[in-house]
Image (cartoon, rainbow, N blue to C red):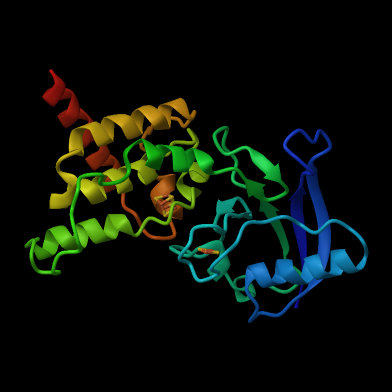
Length: 248
Ligand code: SF4
Ligand code: FES
């Protein structure tokens, strides 16, 4: 099959000539979307042109590195699926496919389709961890946790930090991401000691990074490749209020 890729090209953060460029690529319905970009890049390198920069690592839907807006949708046309797990059979032969980077003030473009997501790292560094001494790894059944609670914590822990939720939100809000991280730890016994200060510090850092607030559009949940539900945002609001009441 043959497709036309309309790709955002930007040589660097301050490139004033950035814009969409068209490339025709011979691909195959069984190839992944990123493999199709590999084919294009091999061709560009052969011609002495600059290859398209894009983020990827595991290509298995695990790491959260891949991050393309495909035809206006973060991670593309398939629900609950990362960019790296999209295959060309999702598109018709001769399709024109627009490929852009995540767009948010807090995720500045580095080059082409690659953006700087270190703002997420700084939010995690502000409180997304357990710092109490836990000693050696205990037996798995030494701290009883109810099945329902364990499953909810696990569902929130599935967040891979990709940032699609931010890219989809009209406010560029990071509340689904932060909510997932706060909720995961708030549900478990190990997360109780720092529970209040964690939510407060992470939300303060989120605001400092320039992410917007939630106004209940739900776009984040719709594009999340790990199906993190809006419950994460509800839990974040509860945890933040709980911390404020504790301080009062
Ligand atoms: S909540 Fe979903 S979309 Fe947002 S960073 Fe986590 S996995 Fe990605
Ligand atoms: S490259 Fe790791 S999730 Fe897509």
